[in-house]
Every structure is written in C-alpha cells, then in structure tokens.
Amino acid sequence: MRNKGKIASWNDDKGYGFITPLAGDNLKKKAAQKSSPFALLFALAFLFVIGISVATGALSSIVLVAYVTLSLITFVAYAIDKSAAKSGGWRTSEGTLQFLGLAGGWPGALIAQQTLRHKSKKTSFRTVFWVTVVMNCAALVWLHTASGRAFLDPLFGG
Image 1 (spheres, rainbow, N blue to C red):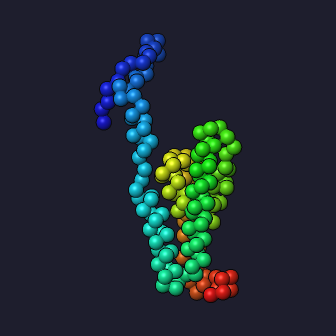
Image 2: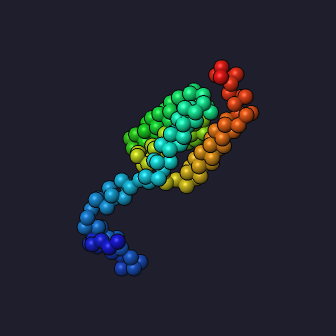
Image 3: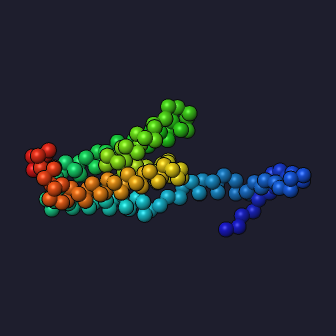
C-alpha cells in the first residue's frame, strides 16, 4: 500500500528523517479498527457448542450459565482495564485477567480483545491466554466423559 506524505524532520548527520502521512490520523484509526472475525466467530461457536451439549443432555445447564456469566464478567474486566490504561488509573492485573479466562471467561476475553482492542498485541500475554483456552477446552472435553459426568452429577444434582 502506498501513501503520500511530507517530510516532518530530517537529520543530515544521521541520514534519516520522519514522514507525516498526508492522510493524517485516518491511517491510525483504520489500523486500530481492524479486528479478526475469526476470533469472534470462534468464541460464539464455542458457546453455541456448549448450548448444544446442554440441549442434548451431555452437560448440565449450569455449565452454559457459568460460561456466559464468566464471559460477561471477563468482558467487563477487560473494559475496566482498558479504561484505566487510557486514563492512567488502577489496572487489573494480567494474572486476574488470565484467571478469569481459565475459569471459563475466555470467550468474553476473546471478544473484548477484538472489539476493545485491548491485550491483543502483547505476545507474552497472548501466549498465556491461548494456553488457558486450551486448558479450559481440555477440561470441557473431560466433562463430556464418564468420569467428568461422574464428577459433575453430585455437584449439580444431575
């Protein structure tokens, strides 16, 4: 992609300078607005699969309620942290955000990362985030097994 700009400053001694795009901040805004539809679809598809598991009797409805509730709480936690990051206020710890995702709020976290553009670029955070998603999904798969159901039944009277 080619853009036009004008030289904002030039340093002859060092042989480089800075260019200001003629489009101004529009380029920054367009770049910031990009989000991954795959990530949003993945989170929504996951919740849909949980709903199907509940509808077929493979999982207790409590599991769906827990995922949706934790996703909403996690989304709000990301929104609060994003607001604090902008205003210089008290931040939510990354450990708390990761724990909420691991506990089942990762669909809400993924949606927040894409829609709020928060915690979507820091590689170390994203790596741990995806590890927690895999761990959470593995636990969910286990809940679909006989031993997983035997674990859930006494808890929820199933």
